Image 1 (spheres, helix red, strand yellow):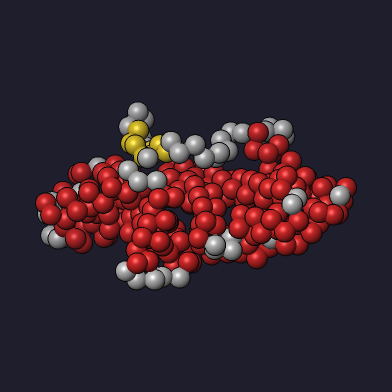
Image 2 (cartoon, rainbow, N blue to C red; image 1 turned 90 degrees about the horizontal axis):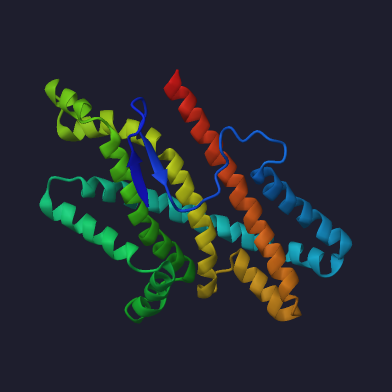
Length: 267
């Protein structure tokens, strides 16, 4: 999911290959691909209800609570996944063999099982032991899955910090834990912020899978409207456009955040 690129001597950068559409910093053209996609989607969401109020206006007024639920699932999942990912990343570089082995096995197992299967397993299979609410099952599965990927990002970020800084901290009397919390992790956070933003966008898109658990997210609300009215083409067109606007909006925020971090490093 993440790898370290040390081709430049001045700055270490984590490259992410999950295919998120992040605008380039030098993409200033009026008709850039991001602007065409983003404003084109917004224009369609405005024009379609004007041209055909029935059903497009009805669809747009039907799905706002689904958009809110999508944000709730995404926000809760990324929050807990960050915590899990941080401890996983620390575990992956731990010198304590049992901790390192547990963290490594967790990452390998989770990355080898599709998220959809994890959703089914936590809600249906584990439901034979303990019944959990649909929203809790959805957030748990998303956290469990993305915690592994974020763990690899944190591991790569920590290892990208020059080892001399840890050695210098130990030389002035800091413990390894103090050096990690005061010296290494603050620098790591700056390194991993852009790829964490990428994972947030990926998680936002994958949150559509929670609709299979009857969680009333954006896709689920669209399915409910389509099943009642049989406007499948129109409904899923609107749902797709809304997802596109949301993901492109956050991809732009990630691009702006990365640009500001780069400026601070150059100062």
